Image 1 (cartoon, rainbow, N blue to C red):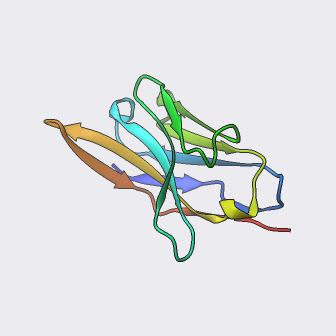
Image 2 (image 1 turned 45 degrees about the vertical axis):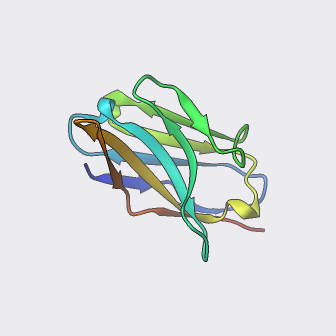
Amino acid sequence: VQLVESGGGLVQPGGSLRLSCVASGSNFRLYTMGWYRQAPGNQREYIASITTGGSTTYADSVKGRFTISRENSKNTVSLQMNSLRPEDTAVYYCNARYYVLRTPYDSWGQGTQVTVSS
């Protein structure tokens, strides 16, 4: 599956951004979708995910500020980011996880840059 992110950019501290990720193909509803981020010099870290049934999970660092959602009819997963902080600056990646005979497979987007700075 191919994933294409959009919506990144430069925002002031306290501001908001909405990231979107569009997936190719016809099996989007079968994927658990997630968002990860990677800041320079750091490992890629988990941000949030949403299951096929709509259950959501968040990293403690973004809980209460970020909201993940999905729209299966549009093959889209979104990440609404509010109350942004400079430490949220990173490249944000969309992830699709699916299973074949109980073996997990991951697909990744190319990433979109988010910069939080005054």
